[in-house]
Length: 436
Image (spheres, one colour):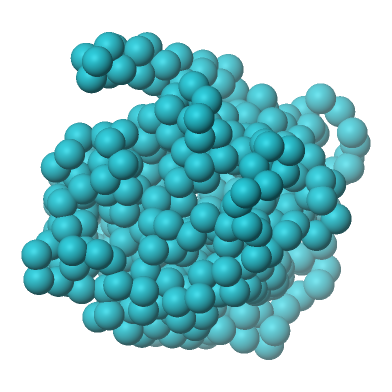
């Protein structure tokens, strides 16, 4: 049974933005302020926007040229088809995905559970894990259906996310204190080694928050007119979310002093409570829980298609390619990714964020940049309905940005990222030997 192309531009943009915003900024604003020690952390958001736009153009050209479910897996396979890299890189992508995809979904579980703590004051580690398990099972139940129903539900969840963001931005506009928002500490812009390491940490957090501008590419096999819809959905998502993040960050530190904000576990709730009172803190917390669920929903939807696409082409276990006989969605892959994500939710957020980014950079983001250049040089047979603006400048900027994030993430996570690739190469050799 084949996948059904039914997602339009609105649904594609909603899927991306629900994934991008989610609970991320409501968790990471304190972390990004702490990484640079003041409002100068806005530089991290700015550089993140530039990197997301440049990398988004890589995704846009590849996605429009090869609009199949699986995203990066399809691009690496098709661009390098006929070479050893055409077998190795798709396998490595699925391999690193097992180490990174569930961690990204788990970050949504962790964030949702953290904000549940705003209401449940006595919630301990055991109760937190129970909340994570319950959320994961609920997301699985919502997604266990055909894509038409999923598309409509995506727009509903996206609308809730927009209301949440509008409440924060509107409050910031009414209560904004410029002197508080731009209260820079001494030597805030001293270009020292510490500054650039802190900037690398801020950029890593910013890119975690931006992750998802490409989520629609994972379900491109279910998108109408992909050559037109995919590039528009990616670029619209990046521009709108970049504006949302910048305004939200300024709104919050314009009401809550940044020295207090970077210590907060419920920054958005504390922000609204300070502006309007306890009722507002409770109301925004409910809305953030809704937004977190929308992000989890979008991530699990997109990521469940990756092992399915790989299995269908003979790059992964055959069971992952099974399509539900009546509803037409990859039910085995969905259940496995959901359960792995619940398991990953048992780790701390501080460990999850750098691990998921560094595991993904080398094979996926840098691998795709290489695939795009290979496509231009060697694969004239593949049509490209959308072409990167100012090629190759955006792809080179994206390469430099991702390399900077990787190298400044900390030696432990650099080794983790390299270890994922090395273990994947070894596993590929064994897998290929067994297939022969």
